[in-house]
Length: 334
Image 1 (cartoon, rainbow, N blue to C red):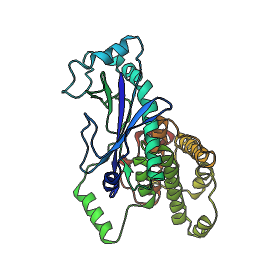
Image 2 (spheres, rainbow, N blue to C red; image 1 turned 180 degrees about the vertical axis):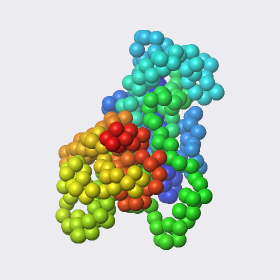
Image 3 (cartoon, rainbow, N blue to C red; image 1 turned 135 degrees about the vertical axis):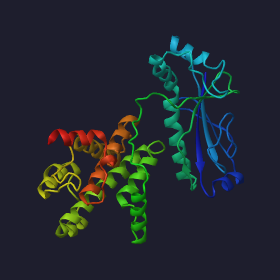
Image 4 (cartoon, rainbow, N blue to C red; image 1 turned 90 degrees about the vertical axis):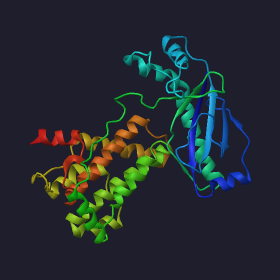
């Protein structure tokens, strides 16, 4: 079976640069033999998410295991789902993830290799572009006809926090902040950049996310203890976990919502400490980023912490922004 990853590339000068010279297809030898194309033309079977993109397509092939999960994959080509997707209609629900695991034996190393190639392309060729999130994985029996592998892998992948809906009050608050030169806090801007990088550059994602957490914490301390602002700006802050365990409780910060003193829950602090240790290994030793699921857990913990910082600063009026896990820990601690 053949496997393909397509990464969309978006940049102001990218297409014009590729029209000047579009490299011919080439082979990457490791960790699998990967045929690679970088082109202005969309690969067969791929529907671009927008116009004026370039595409990095990486393809490999391999022998599936001799088991029922591989057979499900092979049978999913006839008939395809909606004409362009592998059909898992005959796969029992409790075995779907095992089918994906069979495909992921090839797709996971292919994905990691393709992203590293894109980063090298951007750096060494001096190309100005953003690698967009991978839209689909593709499978083919003959290398000519390609079907997308559904992205709906499991209901346990990512639990999306449901934020409060827009309202007249919230709209007025946004307008008021705009008219008084308000802006999204830098910590949240950094976090959004980090979240968008979690697929295309996971190491940078974690480094930027930790920077967001440290910026958020410094803003809280600078607001509550103005005399500490100069010190925070002039010297490196202690480890974030130590600050949250030892220093924040001494400030006796009260929630503008509950009126009681609150501190980040211990489980949240532990996750932030894990993230900080992983960040340090990336920055100082050059290690790989955590696995994707673990990375997202770290990012979600940092996001929670930023909302807590907003609450400390009196800028968060609705606890719906904070995850249920944190709210439950606070409730149990009362």
